[in-house]
Length: 314
Image (cartoon, rainbow, N blue to C red; front, top):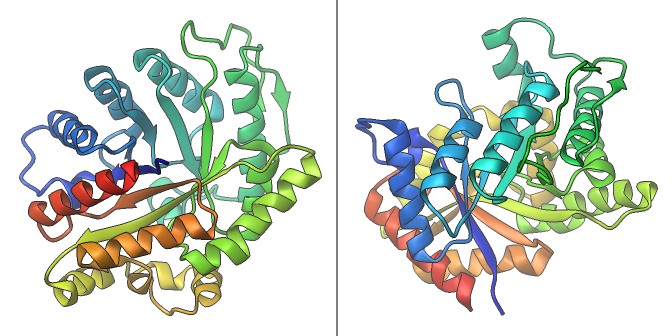
C-alpha cells in the first residue's frame, strides 16, 4: 500500500532564503521532493510570485511529480482569468496540474486590493461553476449574482482540459460547496479530530445534496522533523500569528481541542512526525501535504521529506 504525500513550497519558508531566482529555486526544490519520493508539489500564492505560472514552468522542467497551486485566492481574480492560466499550466505539464483555490482572508485581501471581498460563499460557488464549464471543454456561459462570464470567444485550451479543482476551506458553508462542486477539499491546520468530526462530514453533506461521490480530502499540515522542537515551535507560533483571530479557524481549533495553530503542527523526531501523519490517514484523509518544513533549516527539511518519502512507499 502507498500513501499520497506531497509538499507545499513557499519560497520565504521553504528554500532557505537568499534567493537568486525564485523560479530556478522552485525547480530545484521540486526535483528534491520528487527524488525523495513525494507524490506532489504545490506552490503557494502570496503577493510576490505567481503560483500558477510557477507550476506551469516547474512542472514542465520536472517530470514524474504532480503539480498544483496551493492556493490562489479567488479575490480579486475573475474565474475566466484563473481558468485560462490553469488550462495553460495543464497543457504545459502534460496533464499533471491541479488548480488549488481559496477564498483568502478578508483581513489580508482588502488591505491589498481594496473593498470588494463581499459574499465570499456565493463567489466560491459561482467561480467553481465557471471552472466546471471551462475545464469540461464546453463554452463558458454563466450569469450569476456576483460573477458574469459570457465570453464571445472560445475558452477551451488544446491540451488543457480536465483540470481538477481543489479548494482550501475550513468553514462549514464553504466545505458544503466543495462537496457539491469541487474535486477535493484541502483544509489547512485542521487536526485529525477536526478533520474526522468537522471537515469530512461537512464535505459529505454537500456531496449528498448534489447526488455525487464525496470529493477527496487533502490535509495540509506543517511538519518539521527536528532535534530542537522547542525552537521550531516558537518559530511556528510567530509565523501563524494571525490565524487565531479568524473566526473559521477559531471553530476549527476548538474542534481539535487546541488554542493555537502551532499545537496542530507536526514537530518532533522522525517517529513523532510519522505518527502524526498516520493519524491524518486514519482520520479519513486521502492525501497529506506537508508545509513549512524548512522554516528552521534546510537539513530539517531534508529529513522531513526523506521521512515522508518513506511513508509514501509503506
